[in-house]
Length: 343
Image (cartoon, rainbow, N blue to C red; front, side, top):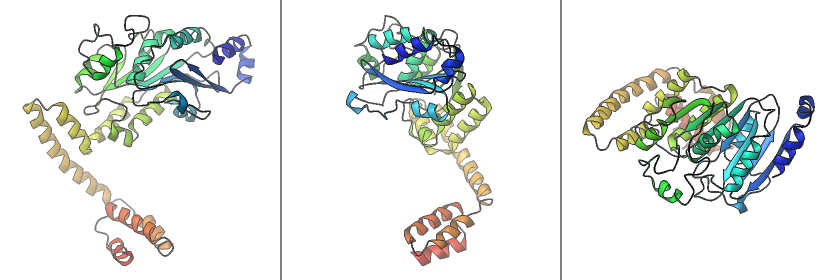
C-alpha cells in the first residue's frame, strides 16, 4: 500500500512543499481491486472513480500503462484522481483489503479540500457507499444501484442481485451513505428497478432520460459521447448545466434506438404504446423538416475539393468523401456526376 505510506509522509510537509512534490502517480493491488492514482495540484479537485460492470479485468491484464475506468478522463481534465478497478466479473467492492485501505486513506486526504465521485451502475454503488467515508462534496451517478441488500431492495430482481449474495450485505459500507455529498443521479424512469434505486437518493438532483435503459454499454448514448460529455462538465465545473443537459437529451427523440427502448419498457401497456407510436410519427415528420432545413445550410465544397485533389492517387478515399457529401446534399448534381465518373 505504497500510497498510504507516501501520503503519511507527505502530510508532514508544508503546503508549499506538498505542491513542490507533485505530480506523483502510482498503483497498488488491494486483493481483488486495483487502484491507480495521480496527484497533480493540491488546489485542484480530487476525483474518485469506481469501475462499472462490464469491465472484466483480471490480474494478468494489469501492466504499467493500464488505466482503470475513468482514469484517462480525469487525466485529460488535469485533476487529481484515485481510480479503483474491480478484478473479475462478480465484484462489488466488498473485499476487506479494499475497505481497510479506504478507511486508512480517508484520514490522509486533508490537503484536498474539494472531492468528487463519479460512477456508473456498480461503480455508482461504490461511490454512494463510500461517499461519507471519503468526505465527497459532489457526486455524479448513472444507472443507480444503492445496495444489493435484499431486505432493503427486495424489488431488485436482477440476476446480478442473486450472484451478489455471495458477499456480506449487512456489514460496513453495504448501503448508500452520502454524508454531506450533493450532486446528480441520472437514470431512465421507465426502468422500474433503476427508478426505485434512485428514490433512495433524495439528496441528489434527479435527471431523467426516458429510454436510456441500464448498463455500461447503452450503445446509442455511448456512441454519441453522452456519458463522456456530462462527466467532463461535472469534473471541470463540479456541476451540470441542467438546461444544456435537457437539450442534449431532447436529441434522443431523433434516434430510432430511443423508441425501441421505450417500446420495450412499455410492452405491457397498450395505452402507452399507442402514445409512443403517435409521438414517433409526429417526430419523424419533425425530423425530416429539421434535416431539410439544415441541408440547405450545409457547404460540402471542402469535401468535394479534397476528393478531387486525391481522386487519382486515392480513388477509394475520394469515393467515400463524395458519398459522405451525397448524404449531406442528396440532390447535388456535381457530387452525383463525380461519383459516376469514379465508380
